[in-house]
Image 1 (spheres, rainbow, N blue to C red):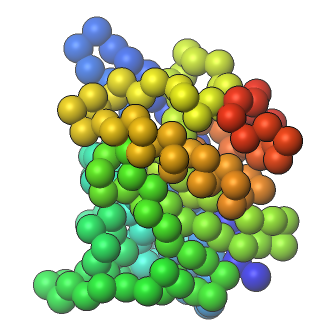
Image 2: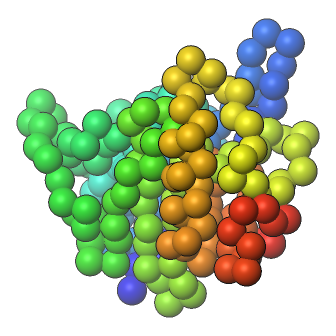
Image 3: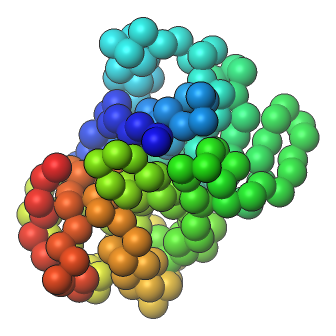
Length: 205
């Protein structure tokens, strides 16, 4: 079975003229490969977290990007030996771009389309011995000062030009149906309450 470990818990604090933000970054071990999901934008935190795992950027086999926003994708290029599985439905190795299968990251994983926060957004379902994890990117996310209540109708104001709220509701519902645990782009892992797929308070793992 695959393994999932959060390296950086994502954060997002709105400032007077911008944001202080970095996505949740996750280490996945699957099919004897090492995968980083959404390496984020805080280089020191990422390198320190890898070091604690006894890893260097050169050790990573794949980088999985849920979407292209810079707080999720800025550091992708530091992984010099990795192939990149992206929201553009392509796997990149240097200048070679190929379509990928939904389980390209291993038999215990499945890539699914989850548009809404942005038109080209994907998530990753990972089967572990603890249950199914959804690496959700910004299908679910919370600012630092928000109470983490899971609501498929929650507004998303970070990128209003790109937002499609109807698609986002569908993507949220899809992940709540598929997963036992959801790892949001910014905020705490939460356990899915299968009795309430619309609104629920967070339940930490």
